[in-house]
Image 1 (cartoon, helix red, strand yellow):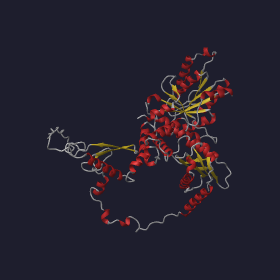
Image 2: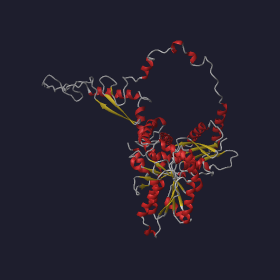
Image 3: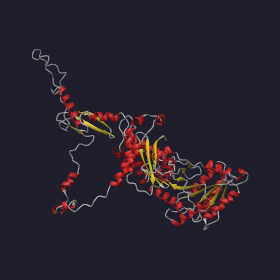
Image 4: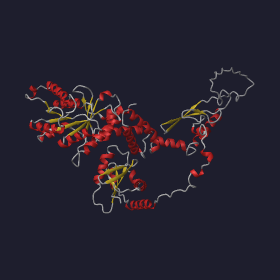
Length: 590
Protein backbone atom coordinates (compact mmCIF):
# COMPACT_ATOMS: atom_id res chain seq x y z
CA UNK A 1 0.00 0.00 0.00
CA UNK A 2 3.06 2.25 0.13
CA UNK A 3 3.91 4.10 -3.08
CA UNK A 4 7.56 4.64 -2.22
CA UNK A 5 10.14 4.79 0.55
CA UNK A 6 13.48 6.55 0.16
CA UNK A 7 16.51 7.22 2.36
CA UNK A 8 18.84 10.06 1.40
CA UNK A 9 21.40 12.30 3.04
CA UNK A 10 20.92 16.00 3.68
CA UNK A 11 23.53 16.57 0.99
CA UNK A 12 21.16 15.05 -1.59
CA UNK A 13 22.72 11.57 -2.02
CA UNK A 14 20.07 8.83 -2.31
CA UNK A 15 21.28 5.83 -0.28
CA UNK A 16 18.35 3.49 -0.89
CA UNK A 17 14.83 3.62 -2.32
CA UNK A 18 11.80 1.38 -2.73
CA UNK A 19 8.87 1.73 -5.13
CA UNK A 20 5.59 -0.11 -4.62
CA UNK A 21 4.20 -2.66 -7.04
CA UNK A 22 2.16 -1.09 -9.84
CA UNK A 23 3.52 2.43 -9.18
CA UNK A 24 4.88 3.86 -12.43
CA UNK A 25 5.18 7.56 -11.62
CA UNK A 26 8.51 8.84 -10.35
CA UNK A 27 8.65 10.00 -6.74
CA UNK A 28 11.26 12.70 -7.40
CA UNK A 29 8.56 15.39 -7.76
CA UNK A 30 6.95 14.89 -4.33
CA UNK A 31 10.34 14.49 -2.61
CA UNK A 32 11.71 17.64 -4.25
CA UNK A 33 8.58 19.53 -3.20
CA UNK A 34 9.10 18.30 0.38
CA UNK A 35 12.72 19.48 0.33
CA UNK A 36 11.89 22.90 -1.12
CA UNK A 37 8.78 23.65 0.92
CA UNK A 38 9.59 22.06 4.29
CA UNK A 39 13.20 21.09 4.92
CA UNK A 40 14.90 24.09 3.29
CA UNK A 41 12.29 26.46 4.74
CA UNK A 42 12.78 25.20 8.33
CA UNK A 43 9.18 23.99 8.64
CA UNK A 44 9.88 20.50 9.94
CA UNK A 45 7.81 20.82 13.13
CA UNK A 46 5.11 18.60 11.60
CA UNK A 47 6.34 15.31 10.15
CA UNK A 48 3.69 15.10 7.39
CA UNK A 49 3.41 16.81 4.00
CA UNK A 50 0.79 16.65 1.25
CA UNK A 51 1.66 16.88 -2.44
CA UNK A 52 -1.23 16.54 -4.91
CA UNK A 53 -2.71 13.03 -4.33
CA UNK A 54 0.16 11.81 -2.13
CA UNK A 55 0.67 12.07 1.60
CA UNK A 56 4.31 12.05 2.72
CA UNK A 57 5.73 11.23 6.15
CA UNK A 58 9.35 11.96 6.93
CA UNK A 59 11.85 11.44 9.74
CA UNK A 60 15.09 13.36 10.31
CA UNK A 61 18.18 11.59 11.64
CA UNK A 62 20.35 14.46 12.83
CA UNK A 63 23.24 12.31 14.06
CA UNK A 64 24.02 10.87 10.62
CA UNK A 65 22.37 13.71 8.61
CA UNK A 66 19.80 11.39 6.99
CA UNK A 67 16.18 11.85 5.89
CA UNK A 68 13.67 8.97 5.70
CA UNK A 69 10.59 9.62 3.53
CA UNK A 70 7.58 7.40 2.91
CA UNK A 71 4.78 8.21 0.46
CA UNK A 72 1.27 6.78 0.08
CA UNK A 73 -2.12 7.83 -1.31
CA UNK A 74 -3.71 10.42 0.96
CA UNK A 75 -7.13 8.75 0.72
CA UNK A 76 -5.66 5.82 2.70
CA UNK A 77 -5.51 5.77 6.50
CA UNK A 78 -2.36 3.86 7.43
CA UNK A 79 -2.04 3.81 11.20
CA UNK A 80 1.26 1.97 11.25
CA UNK A 81 3.31 4.45 9.18
CA UNK A 82 4.73 6.48 12.08
CA UNK A 83 5.98 3.41 13.96
CA UNK A 84 7.16 1.80 10.73
CA UNK A 85 9.34 4.74 9.73
CA UNK A 86 10.88 4.79 13.24
CA UNK A 87 11.66 1.06 12.99
CA UNK A 88 13.25 1.49 9.56
CA UNK A 89 15.38 4.35 10.84
CA UNK A 90 16.68 2.37 13.83
CA UNK A 91 17.30 -0.76 11.76
CA UNK A 92 19.12 1.10 9.00
CA UNK A 93 21.29 3.00 11.50
CA UNK A 94 22.25 -0.14 13.39
CA UNK A 95 23.08 -2.14 10.28
CA UNK A 96 25.14 0.51 8.45
CA UNK A 97 26.56 2.43 11.39
CA UNK A 98 30.19 1.99 10.32
CA UNK A 99 29.49 3.13 6.74
CA UNK A 100 27.47 6.15 7.90
CA UNK A 101 30.21 7.30 10.29
CA UNK A 102 32.58 7.74 7.33
CA UNK A 103 32.57 11.40 6.38
CA UNK A 104 32.44 12.57 2.79
CA UNK A 105 30.04 12.22 -0.13
CA UNK A 106 32.34 9.95 -2.16
CA UNK A 107 32.50 7.36 0.61
CA UNK A 108 28.69 7.30 0.79
CA UNK A 109 28.48 6.87 -2.98
CA UNK A 110 30.97 4.01 -2.97
CA UNK A 111 29.03 2.05 -0.31
CA UNK A 112 26.19 -0.24 -1.37
CA UNK A 113 23.20 -0.42 0.95
CA UNK A 114 21.39 -3.73 0.41
CA UNK A 115 18.34 -3.07 2.54
CA UNK A 116 15.43 -4.50 0.57
CA UNK A 117 15.01 -7.78 2.49
CA UNK A 118 15.12 -6.02 5.86
CA UNK A 119 12.67 -3.40 4.60
CA UNK A 120 10.15 -5.98 3.41
CA UNK A 121 10.43 -7.85 6.70
CA UNK A 122 9.76 -4.66 8.70
CA UNK A 123 6.87 -3.72 6.40
CA UNK A 124 5.30 -7.17 6.77
CA UNK A 125 5.58 -6.99 10.56
CA UNK A 126 4.03 -3.51 10.63
CA UNK A 127 1.11 -4.52 8.41
CA UNK A 128 0.48 -7.71 10.42
CA UNK A 129 0.53 -5.82 13.71
CA UNK A 130 -2.00 -3.29 12.41
CA UNK A 131 -4.31 -6.07 11.22
CA UNK A 132 -4.01 -8.03 14.47
CA UNK A 133 -4.81 -5.02 16.57
CA UNK A 134 -8.47 -5.30 17.54
CA UNK A 135 -10.56 -2.78 19.46
CA UNK A 136 -10.28 -3.18 23.23
CA UNK A 137 -13.34 -4.80 24.84
CA UNK A 138 -15.45 -2.69 27.15
CA UNK A 139 -14.70 -3.17 30.83
CA UNK A 140 -17.35 -4.45 33.18
CA UNK A 141 -18.47 -2.43 36.19
CA UNK A 142 -16.45 -4.60 38.57
CA UNK A 143 -13.28 -3.89 36.59
CA UNK A 144 -13.77 -0.12 36.66
CA UNK A 145 -12.31 2.22 39.26
CA UNK A 146 -15.75 3.43 40.22
CA UNK A 147 -16.66 0.04 41.67
CA UNK A 148 -13.72 0.23 44.06
CA UNK A 149 -14.91 3.48 45.65
CA UNK A 150 -16.65 3.42 49.02
CA UNK A 151 -19.27 5.80 50.37
CA UNK A 152 -16.68 7.29 52.74
CA UNK A 153 -14.27 8.11 49.91
CA UNK A 154 -16.99 9.98 48.00
CA UNK A 155 -17.88 12.30 50.93
CA UNK A 156 -16.18 15.65 50.57
CA UNK A 157 -14.72 17.10 53.76
CA UNK A 158 -14.54 20.80 54.42
CA UNK A 159 -11.18 22.22 53.40
CA UNK A 160 -10.35 19.33 51.11
CA UNK A 161 -7.88 16.54 51.67
CA UNK A 162 -5.11 17.90 53.82
CA UNK A 163 -2.87 14.99 53.06
CA UNK A 164 -2.92 15.76 49.34
CA UNK A 165 -2.27 19.42 49.96
CA UNK A 166 0.71 18.61 52.09
CA UNK A 167 1.94 16.08 49.57
CA UNK A 168 1.60 18.59 46.71
CA UNK A 169 3.68 21.20 48.46
CA UNK A 170 7.42 21.15 48.25
CA UNK A 171 9.29 20.04 51.34
CA UNK A 172 10.91 22.97 53.03
CA UNK A 173 13.84 20.82 54.04
CA UNK A 174 14.72 19.84 50.49
CA UNK A 175 17.86 21.45 49.19
CA UNK A 176 17.54 23.80 46.26
CA UNK A 177 20.05 24.11 43.47
CA UNK A 178 22.86 26.38 44.62
CA UNK A 179 22.28 25.95 48.40
CA UNK A 180 25.08 25.08 50.79
CA UNK A 181 24.47 21.71 52.44
CA UNK A 182 26.35 19.34 54.69
CA UNK A 183 26.54 15.61 54.23
CA UNK A 184 28.11 14.77 57.61
CA UNK A 185 28.51 16.82 60.77
CA UNK A 186 31.85 18.55 60.93
CA UNK A 187 32.60 17.91 57.24
CA UNK A 188 33.06 20.67 54.70
CA UNK A 189 30.01 21.38 52.58
CA UNK A 190 29.76 21.10 48.83
CA UNK A 191 28.28 23.90 46.74
CA UNK A 192 26.41 22.44 43.78
CA UNK A 193 25.75 24.43 40.62
CA UNK A 194 23.80 23.13 37.65
CA UNK A 195 25.16 24.77 34.51
CA UNK A 196 22.58 24.38 31.76
CA UNK A 197 21.74 20.79 32.74
CA UNK A 198 25.13 19.54 31.57
CA UNK A 199 28.05 20.74 33.70
CA UNK A 200 28.31 20.39 37.47
CA UNK A 201 30.72 22.64 39.32
CA UNK A 202 31.76 21.62 42.85
CA UNK A 203 33.21 24.30 45.14
CA UNK A 204 34.57 23.57 48.61
CA UNK A 205 33.28 26.03 51.20
CA UNK A 206 34.00 26.06 54.94
CA UNK A 207 31.09 24.68 56.93
CA UNK A 208 30.26 26.33 60.23
CA UNK A 209 28.14 24.63 62.89
CA UNK A 210 26.33 27.85 63.80
CA UNK A 211 25.01 30.33 61.26
CA UNK A 212 25.97 33.21 63.60
CA UNK A 213 29.31 34.87 62.78
CA UNK A 214 31.97 33.98 65.31
CA UNK A 215 34.58 36.36 66.67
CA UNK A 216 38.09 35.62 65.45
CA UNK A 217 40.08 33.72 68.09
CA UNK A 218 43.07 35.61 69.44
CA UNK A 219 46.50 34.14 68.94
CA UNK A 220 47.69 32.20 72.01
CA UNK A 221 51.19 32.69 73.26
CA UNK A 222 53.29 29.58 72.85
CA UNK A 223 55.38 28.60 75.87
CA UNK A 224 58.68 26.94 74.98
CA UNK A 225 59.89 24.60 77.67
CA UNK A 226 63.42 23.56 76.94
CA UNK A 227 63.22 20.25 78.68
CA UNK A 228 59.56 19.37 79.04
CA UNK A 229 58.38 18.70 75.43
CA UNK A 230 59.63 16.27 72.84
CA UNK A 231 60.20 17.08 69.14
CA UNK A 232 56.96 15.33 68.18
CA UNK A 233 54.98 17.72 70.36
CA UNK A 234 56.63 20.67 68.59
CA UNK A 235 55.80 19.37 65.06
CA UNK A 236 52.64 21.21 63.89
CA UNK A 237 52.95 20.42 60.16
CA UNK A 238 50.09 17.89 60.20
CA UNK A 239 47.79 19.72 62.63
CA UNK A 240 45.25 22.51 62.46
CA UNK A 241 44.83 25.25 64.99
CA UNK A 242 42.10 23.40 66.89
CA UNK A 243 44.20 20.27 67.36
CA UNK A 244 42.54 18.12 64.67
CA UNK A 245 44.70 16.53 62.02
CA UNK A 246 44.58 17.42 58.31
CA UNK A 247 44.63 13.80 57.20
CA UNK A 248 41.42 12.87 58.97
CA UNK A 249 39.58 15.78 57.45
CA UNK A 250 40.79 14.92 53.96
CA UNK A 251 39.58 11.36 54.37
CA UNK A 252 36.18 12.66 55.44
CA UNK A 253 36.06 14.97 52.41
CA UNK A 254 36.82 12.12 50.02
CA UNK A 255 34.27 9.80 51.56
CA UNK A 256 31.65 12.53 51.44
CA UNK A 257 32.33 13.15 47.76
CA UNK A 258 32.06 9.43 46.97
CA UNK A 259 28.76 9.15 48.81
CA UNK A 260 27.39 12.19 47.00
CA UNK A 261 28.33 10.85 43.57
CA UNK A 262 26.98 7.40 44.31
CA UNK A 263 23.60 8.95 45.06
CA UNK A 264 23.39 10.02 41.41
CA UNK A 265 22.33 7.62 38.68
CA UNK A 266 25.02 5.15 37.70
CA UNK A 267 26.62 4.96 41.16
CA UNK A 268 30.28 5.22 42.11
CA UNK A 269 32.36 7.34 39.80
CA UNK A 270 29.81 6.98 36.99
CA UNK A 271 28.38 10.43 37.67
CA UNK A 272 31.78 12.11 37.38
CA UNK A 273 32.77 10.15 34.26
CA UNK A 274 29.38 10.87 32.72
CA UNK A 275 29.86 14.56 33.40
CA UNK A 276 33.29 14.58 31.75
CA UNK A 277 31.94 12.54 28.86
CA UNK A 278 29.24 15.17 28.30
CA UNK A 279 31.86 17.91 28.35
CA UNK A 280 33.93 16.54 25.49
CA UNK A 281 31.11 16.44 22.98
CA UNK A 282 29.66 12.92 22.93
CA UNK A 283 26.23 13.80 24.37
CA UNK A 284 23.30 13.55 21.97
CA UNK A 285 20.40 15.93 22.50
CA UNK A 286 17.00 14.62 23.54
CA UNK A 287 13.60 16.27 23.71
CA UNK A 288 13.79 16.40 27.53
CA UNK A 289 17.12 18.28 27.40
CA UNK A 290 15.77 20.92 25.03
CA UNK A 291 12.29 21.40 26.50
CA UNK A 292 13.18 23.99 29.20
CA UNK A 293 15.29 26.02 26.78
CA UNK A 294 12.69 25.89 24.02
CA UNK A 295 9.99 27.02 26.45
CA UNK A 296 12.01 30.13 27.27
CA UNK A 297 12.72 30.74 23.57
CA UNK A 298 9.01 30.45 22.77
CA UNK A 299 8.09 33.03 25.40
CA UNK A 300 10.89 35.29 24.17
CA UNK A 301 9.63 35.15 20.56
CA UNK A 302 6.04 35.91 21.61
CA UNK A 303 7.30 38.89 23.63
CA UNK A 304 9.02 40.15 20.45
CA UNK A 305 5.67 40.19 18.58
CA UNK A 306 5.93 36.81 16.85
CA UNK A 307 2.50 35.19 16.55
CA UNK A 308 1.98 32.52 19.22
CA UNK A 309 1.26 29.70 16.73
CA UNK A 310 4.30 30.61 14.64
CA UNK A 311 6.55 30.70 17.73
CA UNK A 312 5.38 27.21 18.73
CA UNK A 313 5.91 25.84 15.22
CA UNK A 314 9.40 27.36 15.07
CA UNK A 315 10.41 25.78 18.37
CA UNK A 316 8.98 22.41 17.30
CA UNK A 317 10.95 22.64 14.06
CA UNK A 318 14.18 23.38 15.95
CA UNK A 319 13.53 20.43 18.29
CA UNK A 320 13.08 18.09 15.31
CA UNK A 321 16.22 19.48 13.72
CA UNK A 322 18.37 18.94 16.82
CA UNK A 323 16.94 15.75 18.31
CA UNK A 324 19.63 13.07 18.32
CA UNK A 325 22.37 15.45 17.21
CA UNK A 326 25.69 15.16 19.03
CA UNK A 327 26.69 18.38 20.79
CA UNK A 328 30.02 20.04 20.12
CA UNK A 329 32.88 20.15 22.57
CA UNK A 330 32.19 22.32 25.63
CA UNK A 331 28.89 23.57 24.19
CA UNK A 332 25.71 23.84 26.21
CA UNK A 333 22.12 23.02 25.37
CA UNK A 334 21.09 26.69 25.52
CA UNK A 335 23.81 27.85 23.12
CA UNK A 336 23.12 24.98 20.71
CA UNK A 337 19.37 25.62 20.64
CA UNK A 338 19.83 29.38 20.31
CA UNK A 339 22.22 29.00 17.38
CA UNK A 340 19.87 26.57 15.63
CA UNK A 341 16.93 28.95 16.14
CA UNK A 342 18.95 31.87 14.74
CA UNK A 343 19.85 29.86 11.64
CA UNK A 344 16.21 28.88 11.17
CA UNK A 345 15.02 32.50 11.45
CA UNK A 346 17.59 33.70 8.91
CA UNK A 347 16.50 30.92 6.55
CA UNK A 348 12.84 31.90 6.96
CA UNK A 349 13.56 35.54 6.13
CA UNK A 350 15.40 34.45 2.97
CA UNK A 351 12.63 32.44 1.25
CA UNK A 352 12.90 30.25 -1.82
CA UNK A 353 11.62 32.99 -4.17
CA UNK A 354 13.58 36.22 -4.51
CA UNK A 355 11.77 39.23 -5.97
CA UNK A 356 13.99 41.42 -8.20
CA UNK A 357 11.70 44.16 -9.51
CA UNK A 358 14.32 46.02 -11.59
CA UNK A 359 15.29 42.86 -13.46
CA UNK A 360 11.64 41.95 -14.08
CA UNK A 361 10.84 45.48 -15.34
CA UNK A 362 13.70 45.32 -17.84
CA UNK A 363 12.49 41.91 -19.02
CA UNK A 364 8.99 43.36 -19.53
CA UNK A 365 10.55 46.25 -21.48
CA UNK A 366 12.15 43.79 -23.87
CA UNK A 367 8.66 42.32 -24.48
CA UNK A 368 7.25 45.84 -25.12
CA UNK A 369 4.69 45.67 -22.32
CA UNK A 370 4.32 47.41 -18.94
CA UNK A 371 5.23 45.66 -15.69
CA UNK A 372 2.12 45.67 -13.43
CA UNK A 373 2.27 45.73 -9.62
CA UNK A 374 -0.91 45.55 -7.51
CA UNK A 375 -0.95 46.72 -3.88
CA UNK A 376 -3.46 45.28 -1.41
CA UNK A 377 -3.93 45.27 2.37
CA UNK A 378 -6.14 46.31 5.24
CA UNK A 379 -7.17 49.87 6.05
CA UNK A 380 -4.65 52.41 7.27
CA UNK A 381 -1.39 50.49 6.78
CA UNK A 382 0.10 52.97 4.29
CA UNK A 383 -0.57 51.52 0.83
CA UNK A 384 -0.75 54.85 -1.01
CA UNK A 385 2.25 56.31 0.83
CA UNK A 386 4.47 53.32 0.10
CA UNK A 387 3.22 53.19 -3.48
CA UNK A 388 4.55 56.75 -3.84
CA UNK A 389 7.89 55.69 -2.28
CA UNK A 390 8.21 52.82 -4.77
CA UNK A 391 7.31 55.22 -7.60
CA UNK A 392 10.17 57.50 -6.52
CA UNK A 393 12.55 54.50 -6.36
CA UNK A 394 11.57 53.40 -9.88
CA UNK A 395 12.00 56.94 -11.24
CA UNK A 396 15.44 57.14 -9.66
CA UNK A 397 16.32 53.97 -11.59
CA UNK A 398 15.22 55.50 -14.90
CA UNK A 399 11.71 54.08 -15.41
CA UNK A 400 8.43 55.85 -16.16
CA UNK A 401 5.44 55.11 -13.94
CA UNK A 402 1.67 55.17 -14.39
CA UNK A 403 -0.38 55.14 -11.16
CA UNK A 404 -3.87 53.57 -11.47
CA UNK A 405 -6.28 55.02 -8.88
CA UNK A 406 -8.44 51.94 -8.24
CA UNK A 407 -9.41 52.98 -4.70
CA UNK A 408 -12.84 54.25 -5.68
CA UNK A 409 -14.27 53.83 -2.19
CA UNK A 410 -12.28 56.00 0.27
CA UNK A 411 -12.90 59.74 0.11
CA UNK A 412 -9.72 61.64 -0.77
CA UNK A 413 -7.89 58.61 -2.18
CA UNK A 414 -7.60 60.04 -5.71
CA UNK A 415 -6.57 63.49 -4.39
CA UNK A 416 -3.86 61.88 -2.27
CA UNK A 417 -2.37 60.16 -5.33
CA UNK A 418 -2.63 63.37 -7.38
CA UNK A 419 -0.64 65.18 -4.69
CA UNK A 420 2.06 62.50 -4.81
CA UNK A 421 2.14 62.74 -8.62
CA UNK A 422 2.63 66.51 -8.50
CA UNK A 423 5.42 66.28 -5.92
CA UNK A 424 7.26 63.52 -7.77
CA UNK A 425 7.12 65.45 -11.03
CA UNK A 426 8.52 68.51 -9.22
CA UNK A 427 11.44 66.42 -8.00
CA UNK A 428 12.00 65.11 -11.56
CA UNK A 429 10.85 67.90 -13.93
CA UNK A 430 9.66 66.87 -17.41
CA UNK A 431 12.31 69.16 -18.95
CA UNK A 432 15.00 66.74 -17.81
CA UNK A 433 13.16 63.80 -19.41
CA UNK A 434 12.47 65.05 -22.93
CA UNK A 435 9.40 67.07 -21.98
CA UNK A 436 7.47 64.00 -20.79
CA UNK A 437 6.33 63.64 -17.16
CA UNK A 438 7.87 60.61 -15.48
CA UNK A 439 4.74 59.97 -13.36
CA UNK A 440 1.14 60.13 -14.51
CA UNK A 441 -2.12 59.36 -12.72
CA UNK A 442 -4.92 57.38 -14.38
CA UNK A 443 -8.24 57.93 -12.57
CA UNK A 444 -11.95 57.73 -13.29
CA UNK A 445 -13.32 59.19 -10.06
CA UNK A 446 -15.26 57.39 -7.33
CA UNK A 447 -17.88 54.66 -7.36
CA UNK A 448 -16.56 52.90 -10.47
CA UNK A 449 -15.54 49.27 -10.97
CA UNK A 450 -11.92 48.93 -9.79
CA UNK A 451 -11.16 45.95 -12.06
CA UNK A 452 -12.31 47.90 -15.13
CA UNK A 453 -10.20 50.94 -14.23
CA UNK A 454 -7.13 48.73 -13.79
CA UNK A 455 -7.70 47.10 -17.18
CA UNK A 456 -8.04 50.49 -18.92
CA UNK A 457 -4.91 51.80 -17.14
CA UNK A 458 -2.83 48.80 -18.31
CA UNK A 459 -4.04 49.28 -21.90
CA UNK A 460 -3.23 53.02 -21.70
CA UNK A 461 0.26 52.27 -20.34
CA UNK A 462 0.91 49.84 -23.20
CA UNK A 463 -0.13 52.44 -25.80
CA UNK A 464 1.86 55.27 -24.16
CA UNK A 465 4.97 53.08 -23.54
CA UNK A 466 5.03 53.35 -19.75
CA UNK A 467 7.46 50.99 -18.07
CA UNK A 468 5.55 50.26 -14.84
CA UNK A 469 1.89 50.38 -13.76
CA UNK A 470 1.25 50.67 -10.00
CA UNK A 471 -2.35 49.70 -9.10
CA UNK A 472 -3.62 51.22 -5.84
CA UNK A 473 -6.58 49.36 -4.33
CA UNK A 474 -8.98 50.19 -1.49
CA UNK A 475 -8.13 49.05 2.02
CA UNK A 476 -10.35 46.24 3.23
CA UNK A 477 -10.59 44.05 6.31
CA UNK A 478 -9.95 40.38 5.73
CA UNK A 479 -13.46 39.48 6.99
CA UNK A 480 -15.29 41.73 4.49
CA UNK A 481 -16.44 39.15 1.92
CA UNK A 482 -17.79 41.56 -0.79
CA UNK A 483 -14.60 43.64 -0.86
CA UNK A 484 -12.39 40.53 -0.82
CA UNK A 485 -14.38 39.19 -3.78
CA UNK A 486 -13.83 42.48 -5.65
CA UNK A 487 -10.06 42.29 -5.00
CA UNK A 488 -9.90 38.70 -6.22
CA UNK A 489 -11.79 39.75 -9.36
CA UNK A 490 -9.35 42.63 -10.03
CA UNK A 491 -6.36 40.31 -9.78
CA UNK A 492 -7.96 37.46 -11.73
CA UNK A 493 -9.04 39.72 -14.61
CA UNK A 494 -5.85 41.76 -14.99
CA UNK A 495 -3.25 39.13 -13.97
CA UNK A 496 -0.61 41.55 -12.60
CA UNK A 497 3.05 40.55 -12.63
CA UNK A 498 3.41 41.14 -8.90
CA UNK A 499 0.89 41.20 -6.03
CA UNK A 500 2.29 42.96 -2.96
CA UNK A 501 0.59 42.76 0.43
CA UNK A 502 1.15 45.92 2.50
CA UNK A 503 1.17 45.22 6.24
CA UNK A 504 2.34 47.12 9.27
CA UNK A 505 5.06 45.93 11.61
CA UNK A 506 2.98 46.72 14.71
CA UNK A 507 0.68 43.67 14.46
CA UNK A 508 1.28 40.29 16.07
CA UNK A 509 -1.25 37.46 15.75
CA UNK A 510 -3.36 39.64 13.46
CA UNK A 511 -0.73 39.41 10.71
CA UNK A 512 -1.31 35.66 10.39
CA UNK A 513 -5.09 36.10 10.16
CA UNK A 514 -4.79 38.86 7.54
CA UNK A 515 -2.43 36.97 5.24
CA UNK A 516 -4.23 33.63 5.51
CA UNK A 517 -7.62 35.16 4.67
CA UNK A 518 -6.26 37.36 1.86
CA UNK A 519 -4.63 34.33 0.25
CA UNK A 520 -7.74 32.22 0.81
CA UNK A 521 -9.97 34.86 -0.82
CA UNK A 522 -7.68 35.13 -3.85
CA UNK A 523 -7.70 31.34 -4.22
CA UNK A 524 -11.47 30.91 -3.74
CA UNK A 525 -12.51 33.59 -6.24
CA UNK A 526 -9.98 32.82 -8.93
CA UNK A 527 -11.13 31.37 -12.24
CA UNK A 528 -7.90 29.47 -13.02
CA UNK A 529 -6.53 26.20 -11.69
CA UNK A 530 -3.41 27.95 -10.41
CA UNK A 531 -4.68 31.14 -8.75
CA UNK A 532 -2.53 34.21 -8.23
CA UNK A 533 -1.72 34.62 -4.57
CA UNK A 534 0.41 37.15 -2.69
CA UNK A 535 3.90 37.33 -4.22
CA UNK A 536 5.65 39.59 -1.70
CA UNK A 537 5.24 41.79 1.36
CA UNK A 538 5.84 45.48 2.02
CA UNK A 539 6.31 46.00 5.77
CA UNK A 540 5.46 49.54 6.88
CA UNK A 541 6.06 51.56 10.08
CA UNK A 542 9.23 49.59 10.76
CA UNK A 543 10.81 52.60 12.46
CA UNK A 544 8.23 52.56 15.29
CA UNK A 545 8.79 49.09 16.79
CA UNK A 546 12.35 49.17 18.19
CA UNK A 547 13.40 45.49 18.51
CA UNK A 548 9.87 43.99 18.40
CA UNK A 549 10.32 42.78 14.82
CA UNK A 550 8.33 39.56 15.15
CA UNK A 551 5.73 40.56 12.55
CA UNK A 552 8.38 40.09 9.85
CA UNK A 553 8.84 36.47 10.93
CA UNK A 554 5.09 35.80 11.18
CA UNK A 555 4.29 37.21 7.72
CA UNK A 556 7.15 35.48 5.94
CA UNK A 557 6.54 32.15 7.66
CA UNK A 558 2.81 32.02 6.92
CA UNK A 559 3.13 32.89 3.21
CA UNK A 560 6.61 31.64 2.31
CA UNK A 561 7.05 34.87 0.33
CA UNK A 562 9.79 37.47 0.82
CA UNK A 563 9.60 40.92 2.35
CA UNK A 564 10.41 43.09 -0.68
CA UNK A 565 10.53 46.52 0.99
CA UNK A 566 10.52 47.95 4.50
CA UNK A 567 9.06 51.40 5.18
CA UNK A 568 11.11 53.35 7.73
CA UNK A 569 9.70 56.88 7.68
CA UNK A 570 7.55 59.53 6.00
CA UNK A 571 9.80 60.79 3.17
CA UNK A 572 10.24 59.28 -0.28
CA UNK A 573 13.74 58.08 0.64
CA UNK A 574 12.53 56.05 3.63
CA UNK A 575 12.34 52.73 1.79
CA UNK A 576 14.79 49.93 2.53
CA UNK A 577 15.37 46.30 1.67
CA UNK A 578 15.24 43.84 4.57
CA UNK A 579 18.51 42.82 6.24
CA UNK A 580 17.66 39.34 7.51
CA UNK A 581 20.61 38.99 9.91
CA UNK A 582 19.99 42.42 11.46
CA UNK A 583 16.33 41.51 12.05
CA UNK A 584 17.25 38.16 13.64
CA UNK A 585 19.87 39.87 15.82
CA UNK A 586 17.23 42.33 17.08
CA UNK A 587 14.77 39.48 17.59
CA UNK A 588 17.17 37.41 19.71
CA UNK A 589 18.36 40.36 21.78
CA UNK A 590 17.34 39.97 25.42
